[in-house]
Length: 151
Picture 1 (spheres, rainbow, N blue to C red):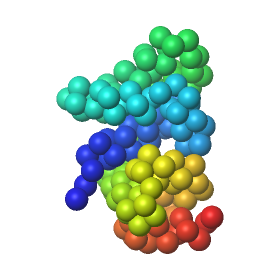
Picture 2 (cartoon, rainbow, N blue to C red; picture 1 turned 120 degrees about the vertical axis):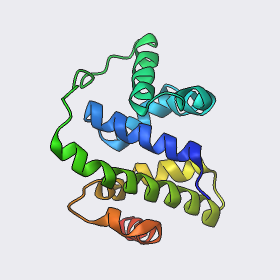
Picture 3 (cartoon, rainbow, N blue to C red; picture 1 turned 60 degrees about the horizontal axis):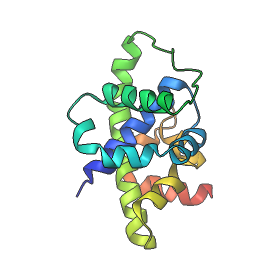
């Protein structure tokens, strides 16, 4: 069964990385240091009522209020045809990542947050969202196997 909170976190995290053009490891460090993961979990019911884009903007505002200066924030490029083609791939990759996080937590007896951190800090995360690899087409079990081979 899909954990909707983890799926939401995965989507928002990916969008934040893309918007600011920052690596997943650097973004994860920022999210951990400034309590963004906790903020998303604590305000999930409110954040999910608006669009994912609004949730990302809320996080940007939260970080600004805490005095964080973000350099790629003005990267508001207009939507392109390529974005419309890759969005279904992103959605599939988000689902695969969510399932992989849940499976890893269950199999290794760790909390979801620890499983999430292991995966998004790995090179496997970048490969999942590099659509040239085709990794996004193969499902969470294949991705977990790929992740294990990468470490």
